[in-house]
Amino acid sequence: MNILIVGDVVSKLGRKALEENFAIIKREKKINFVIVNGENISHGKGMNVGHYKWLMEQGVNVVTLGNHSFNNNQIYQIIDTPNIVRPYNYANDETPGHGYCVINYNNIKITVFQMMGTVFMNGEYKNPFIVTDKLLNSVESDIYICDFHGEATSEKIAFGLHFDGRIQIIFGTHTHVGTNDLRILPNGTAYITDIGMTGPLNGVIGTKKEIIINRFINNGGTEPFAPEDSGPSQFNAIIVTIDDKTKRVTNVERIERFE
Ligand SMILES: [Fe+2]
Ligand SMILES: [Fe+2]
Image (cartoon, rainbow, N blue to C red):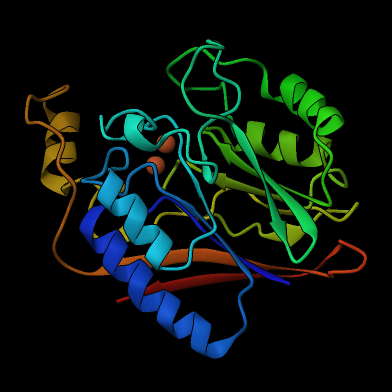
């Protein structure tokens, strides 16, 4: 089976790039399962009900979130939907929603979960290495897929190598900048440090460039955050092929398109 995974989709240009590129990819190859990181899909922060429904219309099977999970208040209306996955390792056990889902695809159990990195991240999180080990031991599945939402490349690479062979796909999100290290690790895990964002090309990781440049020059600045909603866009994704019988990764492919 071919699994298509799209990194952080940012605002209006992200949705436009996603729709256009899905049409192209689906013409070129058979895609069986789709995962999209939706933490920035609604005006750059969080996901509203309408954009979740729109993702379902695009044929998305699972939506992952991140540190912006609860930035749009509408998320509370849908956070218990089975195929919406927020970070698993919130320190607060009372956090709404769930950190993993198990989907049955043609009698193959696919478990998708999300871990938040702890280096350079705001918020309180449990150790992702320790809780992932417990999760893998307690949830039975044919295929495991992890969205590691983190800032530090070292933490993501260490996580990838530590769980190599136990998780079929570990993909990084959150930095909005794609890395060129997609590969199959020695024990069979498909790994990439960050897929990169799908959204505006000429913003600063999705935000209007003037706002962020001003913050760097004037030591913070006061202008409120706003996504770049005009100009060219970028689309970043990976496709991982898994053998339906052996459940092993047989191919990895990175897609990056600009327009
Ligand atoms: Fe993001
Ligand atoms: Fe994030």
